[in-house]
Image 1: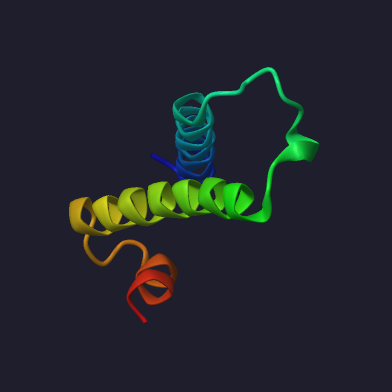
Image 2 (image 1 turned 30 degrees about the vertical axis):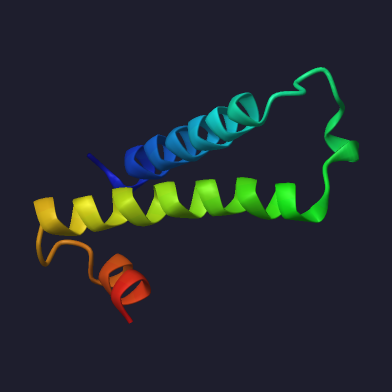
Length: 75
C-alpha cells in the first residue's frame, strides 16, 4: 500500500470511528453545533485512537519501512 493509499485508508477508518461514536451517543437528529466540548473531544479521541492503532499495525507489518511514522508514534 502506498503512503497515499494508507492515508486514505486511515482517514476512512477515523471517519468510521467518529461515526460509531456518534451513533453510540445517540441524538443523531441534533446538529453538530449543539455538541459540547467534551463530545467533540471524544470524537477526536476516537479518530486519534484509530490512527494510532493503524499506524502501529503498519509499523509492525512493515518494519523499517516507515521511519517518520515510527518516530511520530513511538517518540
